[in-house]
Image (cartoon, rainbow, N blue to C red; front, side):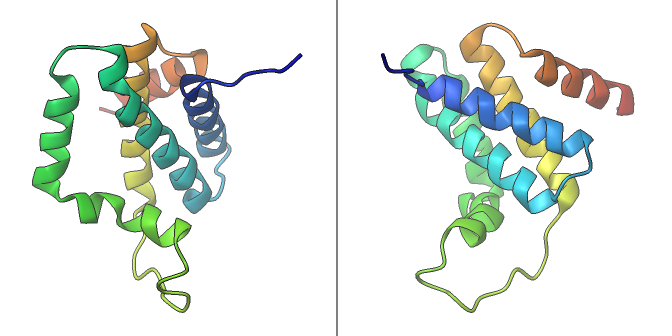
Length: 129
């Protein structure tokens, strides 16, 4: 018997782990990696689950910001074959919160609801606003 893991399951697990680490004051680069990986899975599968224009609007928002800038930290953390001696000049730990929030939003739109951890994160960000 195999325990199949769907892409949505994987994204949920990565995102919930990122949120746990975030509230435990874990390493921001590790949190960023998990939140970004979750976001990318969710971004890629969204059009397969929903037929609205949300993915197009999200893509446009990121395009305005610049995909290269959007992916900069994640690319640094996952690719060393092209730039093994490169260094990260700046990491915005607060920006990692945005990846968690964005991934949570996309997850909720696909799955129909937040996980309890995502709901807690969403409530926390609302309180801070």
